[in-house]
Image 1 (cartoon, rainbow, N blue to C red):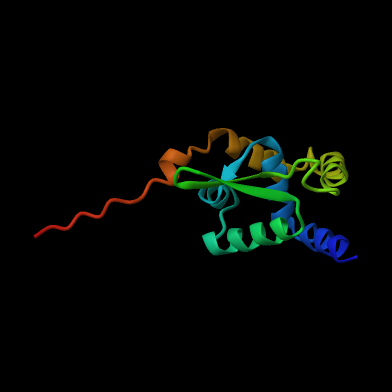
Image 2: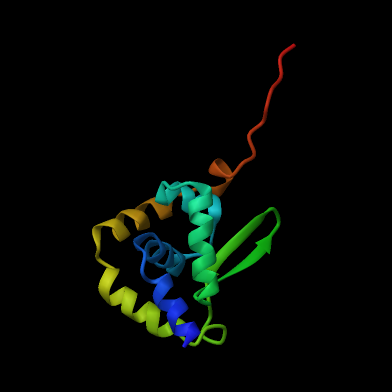
Length: 121
């Protein structure tokens, strides 16, 4: 019952649903999601931990980035059901469509680049 509770908890927040819909399209790093969702880094990280706890997403280290992706069927017994339902219910929602448009233009190399501090003497 605990895993079912975790899945329903994960699906009980609009921003987590938006994250799932974005990750359905492609893997993303936190800074890309922060840019699209227009939320604080810590808020997005918390949402990701709830989704990860429900085994709906996975993370993979790639260079300096941690990429988040939708769990595969063999990693999550609930993911196929969840994604089918979300696609039926949310695919044409205005917010999801705007997120999808932003997603097509997000550039991790521009938004995730470490800022360079210059010190003048």
